[in-house]
Length: 251
Ligand code: F6R
Image (cartoon, rainbow, N blue to C red):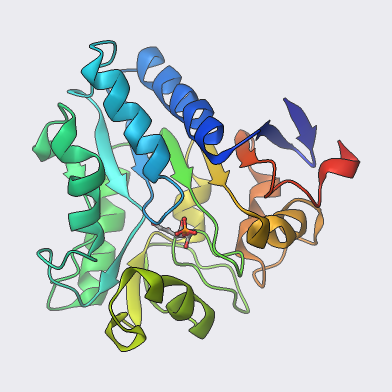
C-alpha cells in the first residue's frame, strides 16, 4: 500500500487480482458493520469484483442480509426492464445472486416522470439513512465519478446530468448502437459522494492511466471531477498495473 496526495493506493498485477483485492476491502467493511450503507457502481470495472462477492457468498463465508445498497447513478429515461439499465445490471451482476434484502436496494428511478423530483427524493433518502458508509467508484476516461461530468463547478446533490460525447461513445459498447445510449442520467452529486465515510475507487486498463495520474497529481478542479477525492479523508484506489503505469515512478 502506498499513499500519494492523501490517497491510499493498492496496485494489483491483473484485473482479476484487482477484483479480488477490492472484494476483500468491501467485505472487510461488511464484517466491521454488517448493516453498512454501501454505495455501488456499475460499468465494466466492478463486474469482476461482484463475481468475487458472489463466489464468497456461495462459499458461505459472507452475509449481505443487513447491508443497504444505494447505486451511484442510472440513465434517464430508461425502463428498468431494459437490459442496459443499471437497475437490470445490478440484479444481473450481483443482487440476484446474493442474500441482499430487496427492500434494502435503492437505485435512482430512470422511469420517474419528473427527474428533478426523483433527484431530491434520492438525496433525501440517503440523508435519512444516515449517509453512505462505504462508496465504491469507477472512473470515466474524462475523470467523471458517478456521472458527474467535467464542468465549471463541482455539483453538490444528486442531479440530472447531460452525458458528454466521450461518455456516450465509451458506453456505446454496451448498446447495439450509439443512438440507443440515453443522453441523460441521474447521478449522486460530488458532495453526496464526498460525504461517504470511506471511498474505494477501482480502475483497470492502460487507457485510464492518464486520468489516474491527473486525478492524483493534477490540480483539484471540476474539469477532472475525480480530483476532488484528494480532499477526502479516507479514500483508497485499487488499480491494476496498467492503470497505474503513469504513477509508478512516483511510488
Ligand atoms: C457507473 C459510474 C461510472 C463508471 C465509469 C467507468 O455507475 O458511475 O462513473 O464507473 O464510467 O465505467 P467502466 O467501468 O465501464 O469503465
